[in-house]
Length: 52
Picture 1: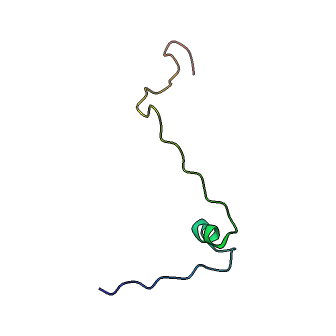
Picture 2: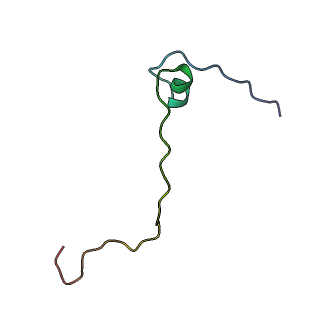
């Protein structure tokens, strides 16, 4: 299978993805969200004796 050609970044920022805009210097890199500290918590449901 042939190797894909490397594509040049787009110059039209109206239809570009954020990665291309960052390479062009028109957008700041997006922050990477921090991982959850405790992802397996019990759900925060209201007590059953109180109406919702």
